[in-house]
Image 1 (cartoon, helix red, strand yellow):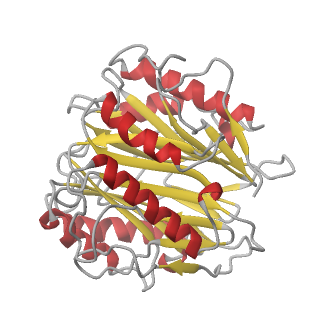
Image 2 (tube, rainbow, N blue to C red):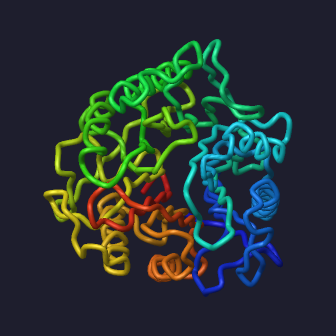
Length: 410
């Protein structure tokens, strides 16, 4: 599909040359890569100042959207990575983000606390999606909320439907009294969160059969002991074959009693009908150590969602252990294989998100960013790169999400 790319004049830049752009518009979808408070030379502004960096990141976000004939009112989804050593109240952080948005915005959101970001002093990185009709008209939005429980500051909402897309905000396991359900139990909290998601999807006439992508952010360390129980509990809600999936461990959530946070993307025809989809599981690809219904890729009405791609074998063990460059190339090769299986290629990618093992180490970002970038011709997709202490499996050091679009008629 034809794409427009945004790179506003004088905007921030990485200190190395890459093919990525700040935002990509394809049809009615606009994908904005992680926006940060850097100079055009790649130097961090306002080091460690979360409120100021947040406002600057949202300013860059607005500029990227305007270059694509959209604005912040068109936003449907934000994913906010912010540095939190335990001293930041997540609601206060989201209030700062929300204050940068128009009063009548209707946006689903997920805030993800991390120990550090790619460059020393960088405190926040914000990516997201917007939607506007190809004829320039705004898409009509519908929202869903959990009755009696509002845990998000305005103008954020628990779920948003725009056109065929449904975005469900990152769900914390809060019971009706606003307390954390089953503290310390990843399985119990997973069931609570999935019940919340089911209720929100139901307000749009959708269900788990309509989910095309799920992202799980669970508190834990490396290894199957933290990954498997909640993964299996979550998977039990989906048919087989199910959606594309990504599962990322965090050292701790903003509320230390929380063990899991989940967001989903679903698709439903505007007349309420279920949309058919094509699933991809190439024979050459890796597998988890235990059976899960998730697929490596899902194509639905021209949208392609890939599960997080990693360097594992069919038994769920890391290949090229702890080798960031080799694992990045392997994950990108898997992405190409899945895209080809779904009738697409690298040129159809609109955005990628990479989480990799590191702290605030620019060299680690540049090592994998330069490799990821090399798979795309200029101008390339939007991108986000976030360091974490560990990933789900021992010696696995990078996981890459990819999102693409093709013509419905392809």
